[in-house]
Length: 380
Ligand SMILES: [Zn+2]
Ligand SMILES: [Zn+2]
Image (cartoon, rainbow, N blue to C red; front, side):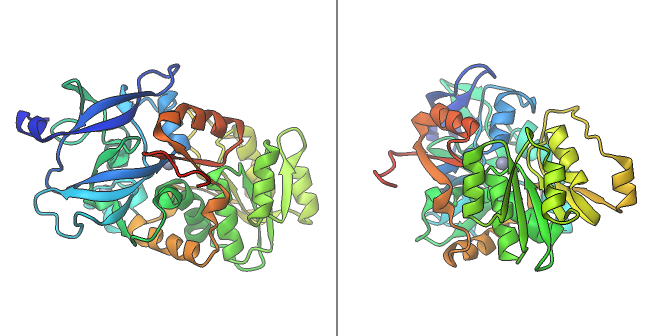
């Protein structure tokens, strides 16, 4: 931050990841004004996604201390020089960032941007972080936002304008987790009506995949998880069968109940045994999508006779192959039509209770915690 920016910086309250073993620390920091191509967002809510936790635990070794949070929703307070498409007062969601110039971005495959890791995880804003704490630089720009805070500076490319009447605490997770689950089904697997799918791990991503599978008309939707409460929610939101893994034999059970295996599968866990099951439960010419981000160095094993003999396709997917500028409005349409009942699995927590929210997420008590940057209304 330059000294001129320091003079114009706003004070923000943020949750800081300092060390893998320490809880998040709530502290006051300074946030620089937006530069060209950026906007300043007053954050109202931000979902907690597994990538935040993977970074905090250093499964993804992003330098700390850092302000995480990449499912931010809020209201634009100021825009940088030259920004015309977004205005102060606009309600926005923040999603992942991309460069817009590499060949993948030009193809519309922004989740595979050549600079994805720098823009979203490891890099910083050009010219240094927008955040300081007591004048010392603090890691920010996580997914070009760092939204576990009362304000965020985001790039216009990853800001999506939404209608003012939408509840920001409910729609915040559309920016990553829900987009990943729904997008993987709708853009990659594209199951025909009447086909079958098994979803391994039914947290927010898996649940969103189940909701999408129901929307596109899958007739058999199998949810696999180790947490009974998550399976209960999955059945409420569209799963036709629940299989408890890994204590049982999920593959045998799925093959039996689908009379030979599913047409499609999706693994959200990244646990090698679950990934193997997600491949072995497929029938001939089945397609399996892999969306998790397990620790670096994780290897998956697949039974060759299954992969070759059944003509299986295995496809890795980032952010549901979605272009957020197009897919977030589509998901909002599903929400408005009542097909994406966010209120059934999103739970608000005040920012100060981030560590409790993570405990509840880890234990399976809550599917999708969303941090709210002021006290949520009772009964919200
Ligand atoms: Zn790019
Ligand atoms: Zn995420």
